Length: 124
Image 1 (spheres, one colour):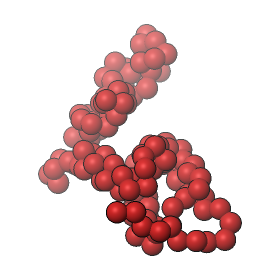
Image 2 (cartoon, one colour):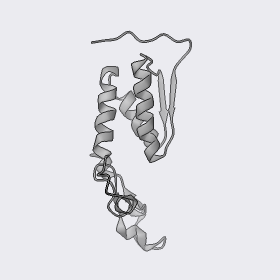
Image 3 (cartoon, helix red, strand yellow):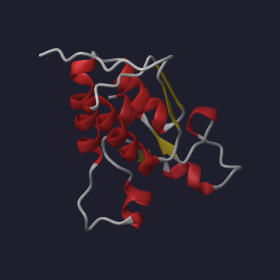
């Protein structure tokens, strides 16, 4: 079912910043806009905002909410796992730790492995 887009003057620009937990909030903001039949002409984001932006811009308007929900449901963790578990285990479908990088800034890990976390699970 195709709904008519709400007409507003000018262009609608959705700007999404970074900050992990903020990304879930951004998905809710997009849902509210979508429910009001307001679709962005432009989506701009950094870090988690870029991921949400890619999910929004990379899908047809009718599929965007479902893709955002799918992504954020995959990131959910059991309520008993806390900050320490996330720090040392990561979030399986989002990021995983690179323990060798924790050896310090002078550890011979190479440029590609120098960050504390790998986002390879996110790309999968």
